[in-house]
Length: 404
Image 1 (tube, helix red, strand yellow):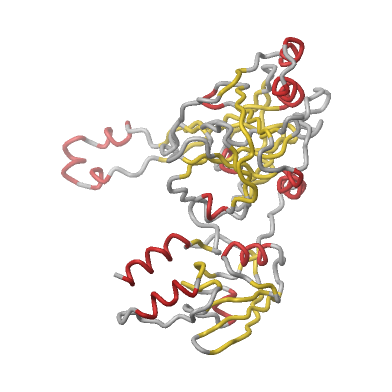
Image 2 (cartoon, rainbow, N blue to C red):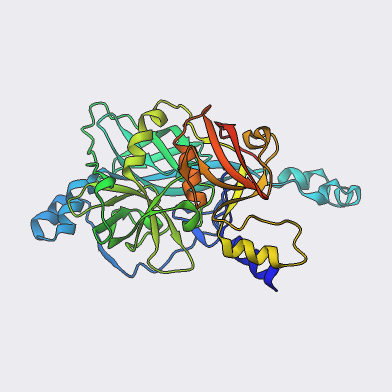
């Protein structure tokens, strides 16, 4: 029983430092609206929706002294709807490999079956400069073969995906802004956001353009693992402003109409829990993505859980335990991936990491941040405990790549 409890408690803390795997949100869903590729997405009741802004938001400002109306009048015109289309191939019909089936129905049957089909998706974004660069989520434009951008005033532009980064779920789309006098969103400073600040979400949920919801900032620096998205490297802003399918990529505003975040995900198993990427993170990566360059993400190649002396003791007291764990606080290595810097450096399953670069680590989030901030090719000194031996190992980080 103790072993079962131990493994159950460990599993609640488990997350991967190795990213690039298939997106697996569990009970958390990205907030884009796609007809086919994301059937798990579902709408939630927009209980705290406060307005659906008219096509001319400046008229709203003249009718109301509400700070919400004024904030949306300032940035709302820069919010766009992003429609995508991609072609997917139907899987081969196994019956057509059966000679009897083919003889009975004939080859014409297989030729009449559609081999490809078009899949549409929809999300939001916002214009950040007069040249026509738009910030949105990577999952909004993932795999898109055509992108159409619709402005609040009804003007439609073809869009070009300039760059995407799945690890942070950020993307940049470009439209031709030359001579168009495009509206531009006012970018704020997410570093100045505090819990309890007003949060205004603007987007196109369910294709309903220019929809606005109001809430507050519930939490700062919500880790991706705690949010239920362990393959991302972002500390999210958490808000109770309603974020629905189709809101993905749209702005989260403060009470002055400045963008403080990019609406990204919702929890399907709870009301009033949404997540936004801090705008400062997007500012850091915008130029790299706009240039079509890959964003650097160093990694070492371990899967880990947070360890406490109590959890270690429960494991060690179990006579059926296959490994004895040091009864200390740190980060327990659960798996070392093949062909990774961690394997080459000699890190092994069961090691407990206590320091990285002379910084004490007691959680996977802390270790992940140190690695992410180190830069590709950096030599990181890991202090760890292996059984009753204290060790120091140097790990040279490398660029994250997709791994199965």
